[in-house]
Length: 347
Image (cartoon, rainbow, N blue to C red; front, side):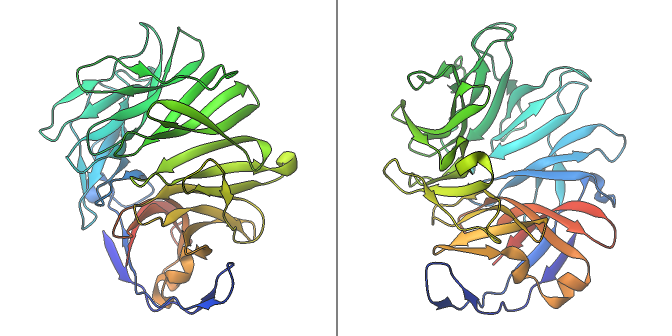
């Protein structure tokens, strides 16, 4: 585990007009691999409202992938291994529950699973026997959302799971043949997308289980990737002509509001906290850069790094989540070692 303090950030001009000073000092923590082995061995996949970071890492004693949870100091703790195949943790809440996916045997189809705070675990059942399922989000109440096939090898439907109960499908938007839920708020509102054809999907929210088609920013596809407990949602949409991908935010109502990008091309929003600060990644000079959207502006999180961080070779490529204290989880690349590793950036 390596921790580096970032220096002051220079003033930045925000797209909404006027200049805004950004002088916050941040701390960059490179999260450990399982067993603290050096190299490109881990991926960060989710962070809870209070900063519980989870993901996957190659086991220290073999090449099998294990589900991990990182401590506040960046130490990787392996969750109880399930089956003989690979395990991954993809989301967590602040009750100690961790949502994941496991291959019961090597090469088998992944099965969603829930680890409880006491280390016990249970598979999440599919809608029909023989059907496949995916799980994507969990809230503090333990409500889980994802998608499950309504028949073997058939389309998926957005579903939720509650402990000890079979999956409950959400209604589809009229005209849609399938759907997926990606995130769930504390009040039970759900974000995701509905599918109208193999080339057309549209961002969707379910409020009190009623679906609303949010449309796109001009293209044929969009999706909600995260939703906070206030009901704000973020995601991505193809633009007019499907030439670029644009990030969006939804603040009440049913209209997507386009967020700015770093260089006018592509960007994706993948996380939002309860203060309305969003994160994701975007293109800049032909490479991906971790991005924060705050007060209407797009901030390249690499601008938060000190000269020492940059001299050490660190480039923040992807931000995938942010907790309510502003701590960002993502993936960094080191130009010296040529390895990608998970990071946490803390104000």
